[in-house]
Amino acid sequence: MTSRISYRPSYPPVEDVLLTVFCACYNEEKHVANALSSLKATMDTLKYSYEVIVIDDASTDRTSQVVEDWKRANPDVPLKLVRNAKNRGLATGFVDAAFMGRGKYYTLLCGDDPMPPEAMFELFRHIGKADMILPYPEDLQGKSRFRRAISGSYTKAVSYLSGHKITYYNGCGIHLRYNVMRWGPYSFGFGFQAELVTRLLDEDVSYLEVALPALTHREKGSGGALNVRNVLSVTHTLFEIVLRRVRKRTFGN
Image (cartoon, rainbow, N blue to C red; front, top):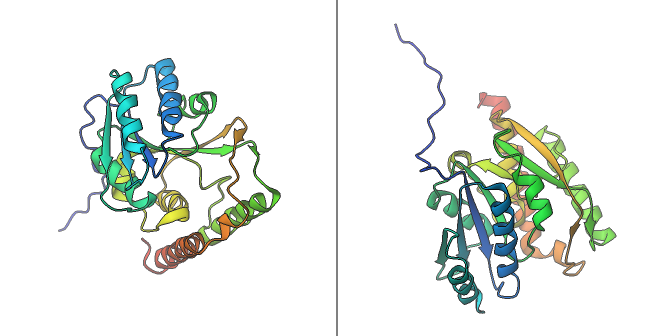
């Protein structure tokens, strides 16, 4: 007689690190120091153990030098800088850094648009309450009506096609690092976070949605949301979500 045992694999050793923070950078010499300082201020308040992995994605400016300077000025922060020889994209860096890290939990810090310490504190203080901590903005100051409409339409499309209902799919959420390594997204560019979140929801992970204080958004032009790369990325993400839902209904996994 064959017995079937259902189990969840154990997490990799974490070496007492609670949170791995992936800081994604591409030509961010003007902003990355502020992003890292905001992170440090938050972690100094919360007293969490953490590490920072900065990936300079083949920048052509002084991004790496700024990070090195910041690291020397803040020797108490465990920071690793990785320089890509060629641009590999945000989604690839997100998965790569998860494998480089040691923390139990994992999150993304964007080097180009740092989250204010008060918003970061509100998000990070919920670590451990669920497998996914999913932030959504109460408001995005400076975001045009056009960009708000695009964002709202995208959220509705992801919810409809995935069968889930989340307030916001593209926030820099907090995940179990193991889940990112196990269920890492295949999408590239804009849509990879929605693919990851919906996949984890399909796996029945627990989640908590957290409203963040109003965030300042630097508008980059109304056409930016509809450039070819973003359109292709979103199309690929939606296709992956639909394909996964069909597969689950057909094969049960």
